[in-house]
Length: 594
Ligand code: ADP
Ligand code: MG
Image 1 (cartoon, rainbow, N blue to C red):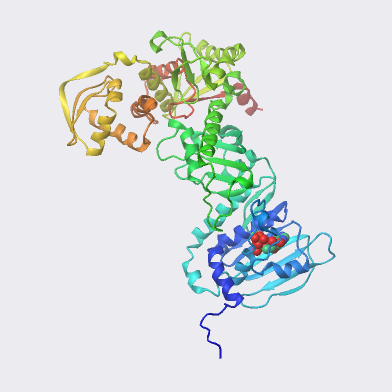
Image 2 (tube, protein in one colour):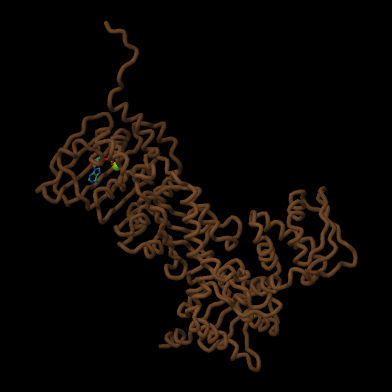
């Protein structure tokens, strides 16, 4: 009689335990099967799920297929065709390599695999059920592989109980399908929920693929990013501020084709937007990082996608700079101006009125940032020198087209309480009154000479306000910037605030709400770097004070807004990066009458 209390687990039990790691939910099955299809070189991958994958996951590929002998091995644990030895482990180029997925899935579900190689006369089908020896039989079908997974977790009721609602489980699957489609734009990816086609994405370039999967306008809303440094390449697209989301649902990052999560990279992208985004907004991006697999550890936990880079900081800087320069260089002004040379050069020396500080200023057309020019100092300065006479002319033409209509007075119509419609030489000009007014106020306030800021109107009697200690502290922190705007305040530690003066355009009686609104926005916006604090606060002020959508304007106010907008240094964008106007070309209108 042996004296063992330790024994080796039977294989099916070991697989079932291991499956806990690999197969957590129906989405895991989808992920593993589509990765196998990618590794098999499929050019079309079709996925059908039923009951959020709990009933059925069916993945069809037209890849290389398997021989009868390989098929018999496929569901055995640690059976893989993708690595052979330790040196392969350090240079992995496939999605899978552990040889665990099919074994794990077969331990917790019924699996049917049909496969045929191009060289074989017949294909083969394998049936596997948890705890039973799989059987293989001939199968007549197309070249490629189909894997059908039914009754997931039927033999592990505890796990089945832990699954979330169909809606949630389906959402996980759908996210994985989006990742697949964005990771491999060169493959056709078809996705069905039961009989309902979710998408059928044909091979495309990345830009069109993103447009299809994320439902954005490829030409107008996506900005290309492309940079390489120190063996790391970042390539892809970032979205304009207008399509930023309230969540990170529009953020996709791939490392050598594998979807990953990297908080550091996401942060690098975000900071490149500077104050183009409101607090709480998340930019849309689809970025592919490519690095030498020898330099990155991808041997991460099967379900963990968080990747750490050997040189975290240089990846961060590369992504941040590539995104920032893409945003600066791209045509982010409205699409009608796309043909102007100007559009390709967001940084321009523009003539300024003396009150704006003379000619030595550069305007970032994207951010509206106004800064002193430092000739030859930076790539920005290089861009200014690349500025051509042709571009200048194109711009002048557009502007004079707008201005020509002005004699005697440019007729302006307010439509739907939010658009100001007028004409230029080329078409109908539709101005967003709120965005336009934000731009006007922003430039007006920024143009005031910082030294002679006392544009506030002193109140006859100081107003005493009470605010939260947090707001009072924030007010104290930004007190210089508030003073530059024309506020004069004493904020005390107990949350009481004495207001002695406010900017001229703050209506009496609204001091409290204006301050409270601005502080709330400041809170949401988070910290501005020191050199942008003033701009940041002015942008918030402009947004607070601008006319709203739906606010009726008198005829003279309507034309005033249009006139002031086109007198701005950066008329195209609000300080928050929203387009201020569009032109509907007469040609386009004409063509509609045909
Ligand atoms: P891994 O992908 O880590 O190798 P899997 O358990 O996912 O492990 O798959 C085991 C093996 O089965 C793979 O290495 C591959 O040889 C084969 N295989 C799986 N799916 C397919 C497929 N769709 N087409 C061709 N071969 C496949
Ligand atoms: Mg695999």
